Length: 177
Ligand code: SF4
Image: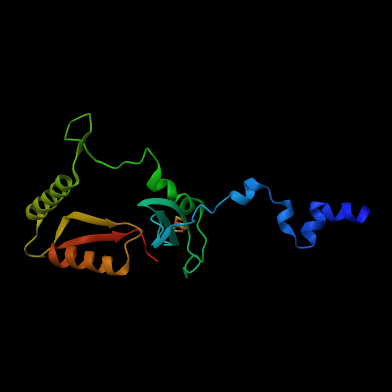
């Protein structure tokens, strides 16, 4: 009788390997948040360390962003900032439109990305044309500061285009590792 009672005790049943005894239906119904997702390998966008990330997505929506255990740099770890990258892409306050403030204006207006890109290109070319030193074959009126996630190949192309192509001499990058 006592043995029978003891054998019904969840602790004893778990110790005996009958673990289901202590699992509620609610717990049993829980599913992993990444179930039925696809995964894309990426790199944290925040700093020059370049920790590896796994971006889980389902139906075109990001479900979660985790550390990539196969990254030789971070081995699955992310600092608090990198671990919060999910919010970077999903937060409702995230800016998704280009805002432009005209000279002397006090307000911002939305413009489309193509127009913004053309405006940047026009200004870049105008500055380069105005300041280009034919003797030195360079301009010091325009500089470029790269972001942390630019990789070696992208930096190579930036250096080639901006130095050899446009004559810029001031180029730097946040990622100096
Ligand atoms: S997880 Fe942290 S340390 Fe790693 S790249 Fe992102 S911001 Fe840098």
